[in-house]
Image (cartoon, rainbow, N blue to C red; front, side, top):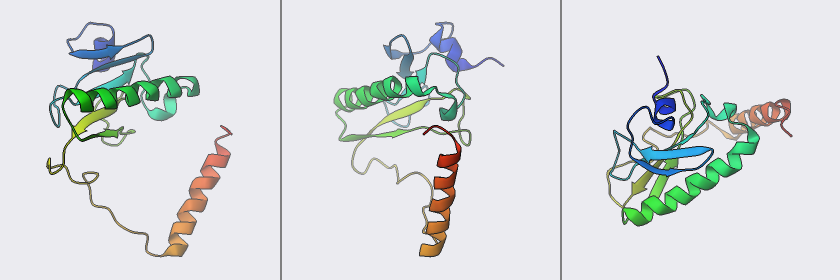
Length: 141
């Protein structure tokens, strides 16, 4: 099945676009958490964040930043929630970022899931070491 976001980018599927440039398209989510909920997508089909080329990340997140401010202003919001799923819970396998207007007591709770603590400082240090090793091994410098 073809990617619905690719079809939107090409103009083959309807969407309420709010922004576009040579690399990025943004449109209203058809199932918004709140009115003004925007999805930002790269024009190129890139399934996950780790597929996005480094040279696109800066311009992409500059657009996300710009849209966060625009959504807050347009919706008279007090802030915004900006997030991307990467594989797990990613409903469309085309990298995208949600920009959701927020207000105090709007009903959204934290990150939508229970948060915990590390069992102790030793376990936190082990996890940090594992992540540092993976960062060193990826060769991205």
